[in-house]
Length: 67
Length: 270
Image (cartoon, rainbow over all chains, first blue to last red; front, top):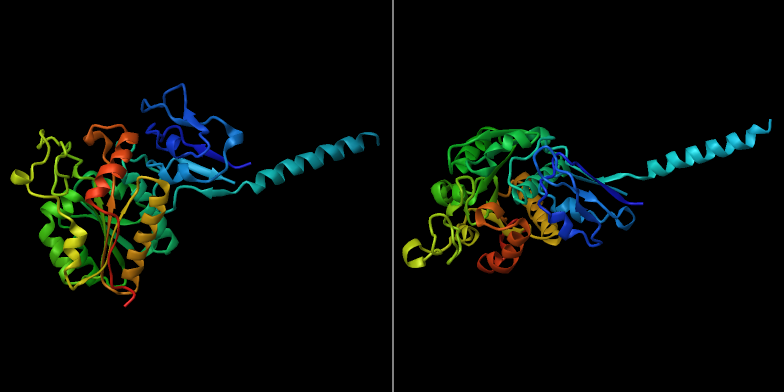
């Protein structure tokens, strides 16, 4: 099952990965991180296909893709 | 004795679980040439993506131990905090001149500069043109975001006609402020330049294209073919007064209409 890991402390909540995800499986967390941003989380874990688009568009290099 | 099958099932499932975990390989993660630092850029800024592309190219070409980069004055001024190789700093606009000195004294090193539009096409235009005209064997990554990002979004030479910035509150008027400078086309007229390409990073497809162009520019220097420059059309959400999503939309719909993407000059095959 492909999956992604998002570094919550480095994420700045720019929402570029939310738009890039072809399966719309990323959403924002309900909490805030230390910098005051809502970080991106993998909401629908089963829907992830490990395409790596979120990694490609992430400007803070805080996403890792596992396959 | 009766417990044996149970134990067997337990161990098989345990090992199967571990095997399954081993199958999960990390296929994409932060390149080695980037430090594990939090970037100081605004949310959604294209600089982070371009940093990653440069770092990936450095890793793939195995150049980390022989690279000397020159950072600009601008948002990318702290590049030495993010790149995991040697980075020096140059006065505003002068990275091509500094890179010339480094490359001429250390021809075996890999030297590239990372500059913004205010740096390369306003304050440092003279250094850029003369380094290009001399055909110095260096690479330049030129990040064009149509304004002076670090100082709060003033008009730059690359600002589009009609674009509102801090110093053009009614939009850039060509009668008063002139026209946007197309650096790639300008340098293409010089004999000394080898490889010039304009790319963008507003969607995954273009990010992959941008990486290819950066890698080609680096390869051009490694092969000793001369001056290469990649202009990356980037976004600047905060200074444009947009959300990150609006800024990439504006890049796609308006920005690249003035600065058309594609190869401008390629003498590397000849």
